[in-house]
Length: 70
Image 1: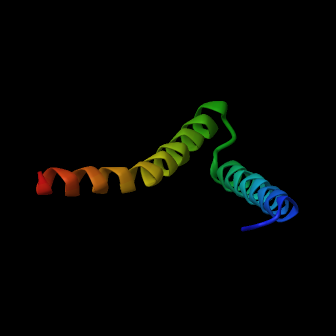
Image 2: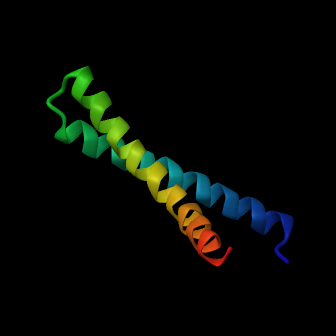
């Protein structure tokens, strides 16, 4: 089992990873956008949609397996 210090360190590392990933996505979106709020918001929402789907996919697979077994 990890010590409290090790767990806190890992949590800080995770926050940094998330911060860096968001910053990278923002940079890519802003570089690719035509600069309008509409397109920037659209691109941001499309990236968000893909990320949400990516996180939901394992649950969909689990439910499909369960349905096939039941």
